[in-house]
Amino acid sequence: MPEWTILAVVAVAIIAVVLMIVKLHVNPVIALAIGAAAIGLMSGLGAVGTVETMATGFGDTMAEAGLLIAWGVLIGSLLNRMGAITRLVETLLKAFGPKGVPYAIGVSFATYLQTIFVDVMIVLAAPLARRIAPRLGKAGVGIMAATFAISLEVGIALMVPGIGAVMIAASLGIPIGQMLLWGVVVVVPTVIISILLMTIAFRAGFWKAETDELAMIDDGGDRPADGAGPEDAPRSVAGATRSIPVADADAQRSAVAVAEHDDEGLRRLPLLVLFAPLLLSLVLIASGALLDVAELEVPPMQFLGAPAIALLIGVIGTAIIARRVLGRTELERALVQGFKDAGQIFALTGVGGALAAVIAAGELGPLLTQYLGASAFAPILLVWVFAAVLHIAVGSVTLSAMTAAGILAPVAASLGLNPVLVGLAAGAGALFCIHVTSNTFWLLQSFLGQSVRGALKSVTVGVSVASLVALGMVLLLSLVL
Image (cartoon, rainbow, N blue to C red):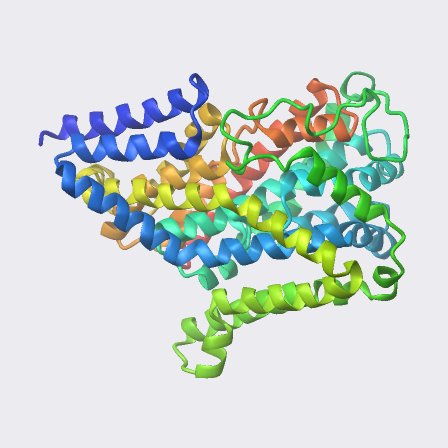
């Protein structure tokens, strides 16, 4: 097949997927499946080959990520139902003080709290953020909004067990433990530097309270003045920045109610106990990854450090705690809600793997390798640009990151580039220019009392700064890996 034909097939298919999602409001799962089938048929795989390749890609991806997604979502659902986030933010405020709390919250949200859905996290933590903001000065609202936006979105795209990071790792065949370890190396400095830069800019005059903030009525700290809730905010046609549905209004109201409930069992348990199973899971995964890097064989730790086993331990431990805090009935409801929320994530993850498999089976990889040469920097920059452009068009962090990573994965393999770098670059690019197609944008605008102009500064500019900082971190990491 001529070179221009190969490029045209993939380009037309990707553009068609974007148009289906943005203009025709086609569900991202269906649009991706159509795109994968079209690329397979037009690139010469044939009808049988296309179906087999899509099925193989779907199965391989789900084998890698399916259990991880299920366990992560269940842990998040249980922690959410127990109201652990409210207590955590209150504790961080007491421990770090007003000036240090944005960084403490940012690192927490971006790392070990990535099992919690973004929309639910905002609903639960926004009231506390509004109380902290006045203690940060005139730009306090902007600083807290940028902290939330940067940390939540960076965590989704780059940090295991964030949904985006898990899906990217599965798409590229990256060991979850390595994605976790190198994700921490990129995520922590990215969050801290980005929050610092936005804080400096806001305090220098970039944030103007008179035009960037809206008056809020304190009605208990859970709803904006106009009464709009998450169910009233505009929704991304791609299904939000995570490419999954917003938690339904009943689930969010239940989460807020439980968070506010004066549960004596919850108050008796130290905060560390509530998060201990999740933290143990992450430590086990990291330990297993370190053993792999050191090429050491310790069978018991290799078993416990396997991500599926480690997160299962986290689910069991969190469920035991939730049983005491919530009772059996609420525990069952939290588990049911978790499985419900995981459904479309499974479908999107598998279909994303099918698309990547079809692209990898064609001749696009060798063709791009020929033009890009042997430089490790060119593929990293190209992955970032692809993901950034796709995100601007589609409004989905995970969808754009997975698609860009899938297209460039064959190039990385041919050049000997570590797939972790490709995955992190894709995640970084997918953060660029989060705007009005994002649920995060509208939730932060409503729940933190920002005008649209203010949200454009704190969310769009803030997360774009984080995208560029993360790119710089990945480029530095490429000098080591």
